[in-house]
Image 1 (cartoon, rainbow, N blue to C red):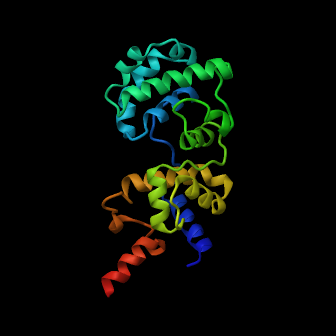
Image 2: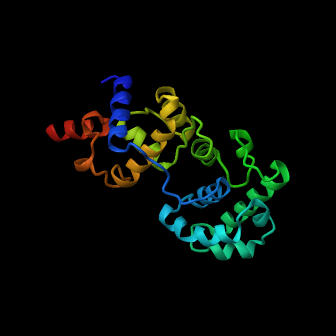
Image 3: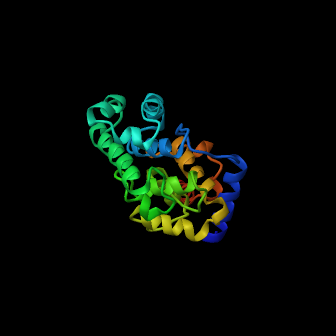
Length: 217
């Protein structure tokens, strides 16, 4: 199977099995999605969705969060991973939005990455989900799953994975492909025990092909 054939098969299969994928983070505004994504680093979406309703109610706008103290914000997010660092990032991002962008969410990756707590992955999430741009956010799931399936080869960094995926995935489905890979990694192609028996990609998966060959030796 050529790399082009693998992409075509995998993407078609994902489209059939998950026709309307979306983020599992709950949010009501672009600003609140930004907060949720920053908080989600090294933490489950389930946990983030438990803490964000009260946080969103307390801080509906960048201006309200920019005026908050570290101690105030910490109380809302103390059950997530690294709450001290994340409280600083949330307040810093809000203040930067107010001071540099008049409270409006930037629409380009370089400006988004000027916000404290926002790396390339978070910036790409914002571009794809909020603005519908052809951006591929590479988290641990995307990094792992794309390599296992065989969509990427030899990638040692998320940026390398992003570049390989963007080379072959059409722009008009890039947003969906990001969610397909995340959801597949979260529920099927898990880090420690990939559930190959319940996977709909085994016939075009490099990892499964390798396992099958080894079992026959």
